[in-house]
Length: 219
Image 1 (tube, rainbow, N blue to C red):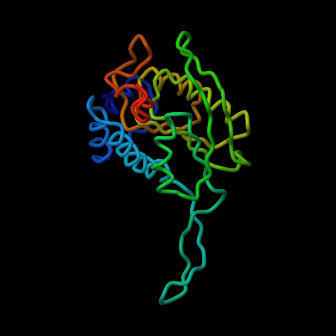
Image 2 (cartoon, one colour):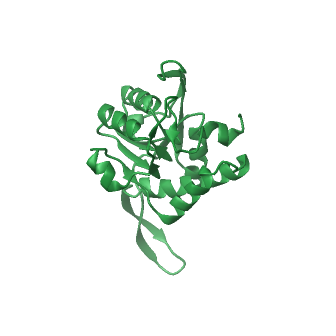
Image 3 (spheres, rainbow, N blue to C red):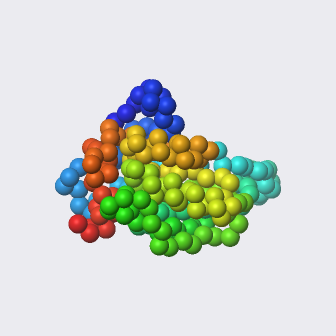
């Protein structure tokens, strides 16, 4: 895994969520023998922790409430409800834990698959709540490998008027971070770790394999 100093040396801009629980759960997920149910449980837990970090700067406004003892002005979330945008299919694995933390959030989906020859993203589904330009959109996908899908998804959201976007993944490769930074320098990136490199097939090494297959048991 690359350290913040190594990322800075390579001019890569990404926020690493280095909480011990995040790192421990990620290490468990990497293990070859972890079964589907355990992998899903760990992903749901780690996504909640990632969500806590990415929503650290949500705006608050004072509201009048009544406690059992007195009236008071208390801080509560303000503005339009944020929207989680899942890049199908693996993004749904991160989505579940984030909705545990913010159940009132809106949800959008972008269906993309990676062409095995070109590694480019091909869109097959797109559905988003109204007023994307008035919301914070948090795009989720477990792996940022080549970044082709992530770059295409964010470009599609911007085309629809989105102005505030963050991208959250579990693992990233340096090549993917660089490509995403170059395509969308205005979008914050969050990850639990940045691994060493991509292999010749576009998979993150050492990584954890194909996240979608491990979530759904399709291989």
